[in-house]
Length: 166
Image 1 (cartoon, helix red, strand yellow):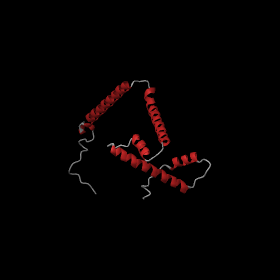
Image 2: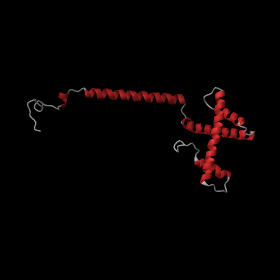
Image 3: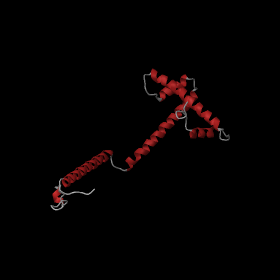
Image 4: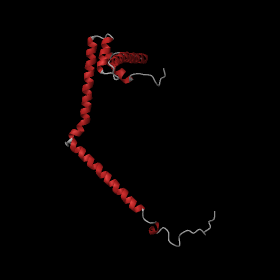
């Protein structure tokens, strides 16, 4: 397998898990690599079964229910399924917190969303109006006749009779 296409899990995450599980033991790099490979194979194994279940349900997306069913089909004990559900719940809570933090700026400003939308539309309209005015001003200055600019006087206009040394 090409090293560029090699699938793996973040080594930092695996190191953290190893440190939590066996805090008083050093693990060789080869062992860490082997643990990474085992984790990837585990994920692939569960994913294949979940994909099979999703296909039976005529779904193109694998949902958490498919993963839970895959764990059951592969013979994992109920306590493993409970642990997986608790991790899923924790991920949902974390995602909600992240979304709330993202939306908190909008809530903190104290202006209703409809009013903010109206203000935004007004600003867009003003910007468009300014752009039109600038274009009109540029067009009016670019249509000035060249003779009125004073660039050519009657004595300075080139004639076809002049010879140029090269």
